[in-house]
Length: 311
Image (tube, rainbow, N blue to C red; front, top):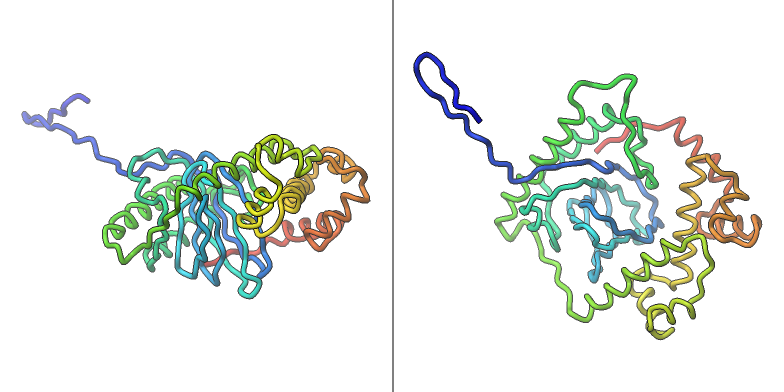
């Protein structure tokens, strides 16, 4: 950069250091879940943090299982499998934000549960408020894959404020993190890491073949593991069997298709490998407690009467 020259003196501008740089925002959510909420899990190539604003939630993160309580926050690093389950008693409220960041300083947030203070709560509230200005996407839609900009009535600088606010929050947490009382470390064994690698591979395989009918025997053959090992692995990680898990992610995909309103129920059933629309409807109701038609109606009402979110 050229030096500045003013009134006979040279000025040398300083390029500012940036310890944390948010490159992209993926999703911003505020969820108010029921006490029986269950999310079967996912993994992706960007960062995500989960903050418990009310209640508590059981979390699986790679090889670790633990309960996240009110006021606690965890980061999931890129390609870390994570799933959620409410405890059946307390209905949790959660803040979830996903973003792309390649800053080396982010390594601090791996494998830690952090306590969040009022400053960070206020920043999250600001981000959610600005997100309502910047985007028309509903912040409570768990199937949201892309934020849609508010092109008709945008508020100047909302997206930039989101970026700056999130960077400020991360920097503040890094500063506080130097004191060990502000976080607790999550550890895992070599055996658990090996289990997680197999589990992640199976999850990716199931997601890639969601339109097919896959048997437990076939999975055992593909991954060269025993039936008992496979069932114990999924019981440990998800609380149920592999067939139950596969059925749940099929229904989650079906819910996404229904919300998109691109396909009818018969087409969705065929796309997800169900033998008939009637069998699809039975499976859908077993998981969600509603028929596909009832779910579609409830989504429509929910989207038309979207209420304000608060923290």
